[in-house]
Length: 179
Image (cartoon, rainbow, N blue to C red):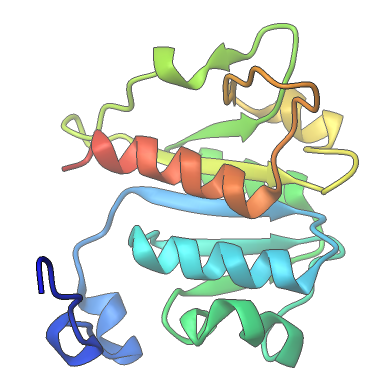
């Protein structure tokens, strides 16, 4: 055998109850009107992998417990702290008051390509990353309330990614600058 795959028991996974004892990452994810429970579950799983501090589920987002969400979250909805809010805009205002830099992941006339943005965690900066609806994206009023917008450079015909894929790309970029 050239390169043996690790067994699950060899991965040093923590229990969901231990997640909150890990050091804060300085990252919060906010979901703005995500309609698919599968997408929300996938984002939970990705947030668990990158140790996001909290997820805000806003607007029409389903909340745990949900069998459909659990199917893709695989239990991450039990480890990553989350909160529901009727209003993404109110959530953004509160997180601004708490000192977070609010970033919408969206294609706008002033959006910055992801590769040009370097998060600075060394100075204690904290970030909120907002991901929008599968069809409409991040609401315009939320984009307007954000400190900046980031977009993932893309080269194909579609110029859009599934929200869970976009969350993975963005969170990996932020993690590279954290480690």
